[in-house]
Length: 283
Image (cartoon, rainbow, N blue to C red; front, side, top):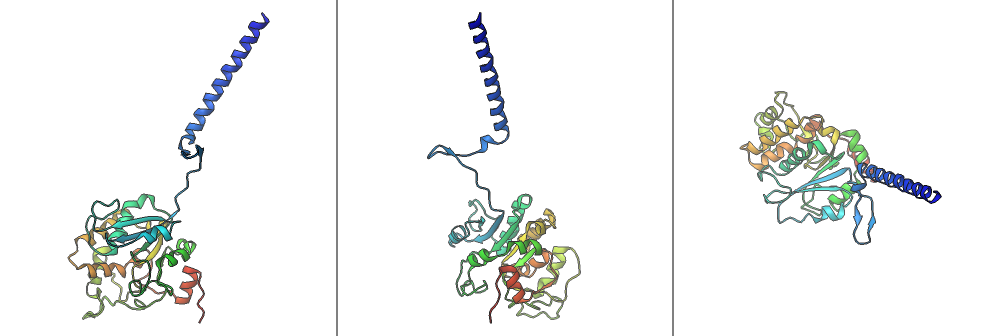
């Protein structure tokens, strides 16, 4: 009789243990245990690295080398669009409109899942004269991104990656000038483009911003405009009969307005270096 009771006791304990184990395993599974990756090289589990909450967006031609984006900016996400390869993982419907096409396409592709900081860049790494408009002695895109104060981007919403105000400031375009200055590229169409893009006739008398369409924006600032607005900007760029060098430059002097700044956005150069890069000029 004692042995029978002992066996029943052991069986009961085993049953309780099995039920507890199954319950615990189910709980672990439901709470993400199944998502923990296993390193097949040594059979150990490791934490899944989180994606950096920031991205560098670049447009390129097939022949251009953009490995520097991945190698030098390894702690950023990368979105590299190949504009002349329709089979590329990231591409555009039509190779038109210079960098503006890629910038808008990225926003359309990721509007509902944007990282907190987005940097839009050209494909060149550094050097003069190709990257003449990029900051610092080496005209280096990697260095500008590495030094970028993302906390300032969050506070300011929009940041031009170029602090040197020339060319572009303080009055690159006078859209109401008659006749337009033929040396001022898009001046002759800027007013009509403004009316089309923003659906209003409040064309500014003066437009000024440092060139050359490399900038950083916060997710919050991007989302201040609806998805449909970016669709509209992009469709204008795709459908306009303006040559690329003109439509692209219209947007070059419109990005700061799209992202919440006044028509003339020309921060003091020294203050810009401090705010954007944490650099104090030494004369």
